[in-house]
Image 1 (cartoon, rainbow, N blue to C red):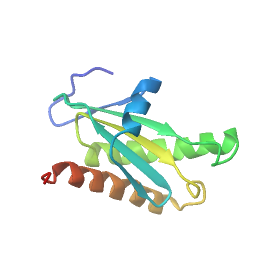
Image 2 (cartoon, one colour):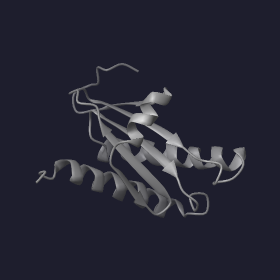
Image 3 (spheres, one colour):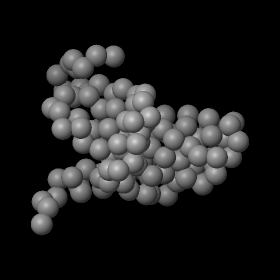
Image 4 (tube, rainbow, N blue to C red):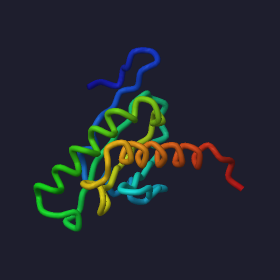
Amino acid sequence: MTDAAPPGRMTIEKLKKRSEYLACAQAPSCAKGAVVVQARPRGDETSLVRVGFTATKRIGGAVERNRAKRRMREAARALLPEFATPGVDYVIIARGGVLKRPWVRLLDDVKSALIRLAAERAAPQL
């Protein structure tokens, strides 16, 4: 993928380095239902959105963690084009109920977390 996106479209890439995940860990986060979403503005004006996914051993074994990350990837693929802010890195972290959560509720969790994080960034700081 490249930085140049067609007008009106954003480019979505995956976070690849541990340092990128650690930088997002210091950023504001929002926990909703079965997920936690962290969002770190990069400070550039590109139409690029980067996203990473994490599931800890508390979720279960490797099979369960991979299934949880697949569900979160699909939720991100469906929601980020509409609700993500360009120039922001996101990390979506699985919580305990992510595997048993109905698909519609999982989508709602991710969507409401993205909306809340965008509103917090847009709110004036006092």
